[in-house]
Length: 303
Image (cartoon, rainbow, N blue to C red):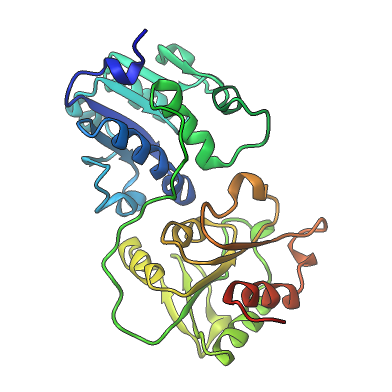
């Protein structure tokens, strides 16, 4: 029997509802790549909040970047809608698209919206283990008919940064206090990077306080397009478990990531050289010396 993907007519439009957040958006791109590689004729539209839309700009797998509105999803005229977000707003948008085929994971609420419930990733992959977010998202397109294969690195596209000496990027901020390593410890890492010839650019979003990093180059509340460009040219990234870490990994940048309450198996940097730091006692249990040693391991320096 033909799969859902095989049944799609030539040039069919596929609506992918993602909405947010930064890391989730980045880790959706491997699934988009798998779908597009299997069916290059498909027109894939991604529904995403404006603040994250720039993550998908320049991506050849994406034909349209759509705002989360009834007019946008209905006007796209999709044959298949795939909801990756799972909330009530995304379910409503999926229903409003009027796509004949509507898919989402079976554990999502509002199952009445969907006629293609997707089972657990473990069932699809045939492995009963904790799966990475990239594997979880890719399993949906595998279930719909893309042949199971190696899941690629996330894909971001950016203009190259201006020519400059080698640099690193430091992201000392996080979305919650229990995900943030103390700024004073990041400052010690910043000094080490500067003194060892890889000066950091410290990045932060709107409302982030980077005052502790006086004397270091900073990129504050910049558009995602500018952040992408900066990350694409970095020699190394160090930061908390957050969206910028996944952005750096998408460009193949070696990354050091500190994990608080998140599971590193689920949220580890995907397919790039990395060092993951955590402690049973929380982030306070990760010493500066551990972070510096992780940086040097990625740089190939023997301690």
